[in-house]
Image (cartoon, rainbow, N blue to C red; front, side):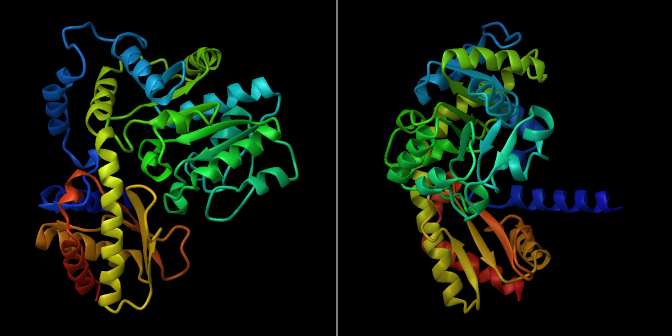
Length: 380
């Protein structure tokens, strides 16, 4: 019964979001199968010759995607993986073999720690340690003063569960240098690295070049179907391909994912700076709107977003906020907030993630303030 209820609620949300005339962002998973397939068939020819043969175990369009990603990130080689979880398992396992130390230093809210069921330790024999528990990446001093050795430092850029937060450029450089002083390699969990360039004021290849290896996702920011790339030195990537096969990632054909990733690089990547800039407008308007509405406690975090994603916190139960959000979409055709959660929140407090993408660029500050008023009226 619980599964049925959850499916009914999910279908209700998806129907409301899909029918909305005004949204800040549409996730790829919001679309029906036929819509996604039709869009891919209509536009894939813009980025690859559709008269070419399909890929087989990683050649053809998959190899083209690997080459393009390696060039963008400034590395000599890259390997395509069906999931980021697998890509990072392999990356850190390969580095452990080279350094002789299977200990990985990372943030306690990093994706492998919170969302992958302990896979580093269970699957790859890695051990994790946490140089800081603050809601930010570790500082150079925390890396230098950490009281046990580690073979690799893994930095999630941006740190999602802390609010999509980033250090300054100088802080990032100092952290990398501190790790190197300890003879540790540096790996960037760059699932959302694509949208970090505006914050750092540096091109992607300069950011990525700080690390020894980088993983990037194609669906989180670029609207692809799935897939990830691990970029690094040629010898590391060659070994990663071997481990990819052992982990079950040598997929027979992956052309739909690869084509959609190439489309993402062509279409979404150039637009990301505009999304990041407009997220600051939306966040400021949300803060003003909650203040004007007399909401006794709220938080927009970061108050000036570092990327095109940020958090909003309210002192209400998630169930009430989710009902208000979906009713607003159903009754007004405006989706302001999507899902609210209580995980990691104090009692009586809920959090949601806000993403600003192409359709969000149409929203003015007045639009945001009006939508907040409608939302809070439904919260009661």
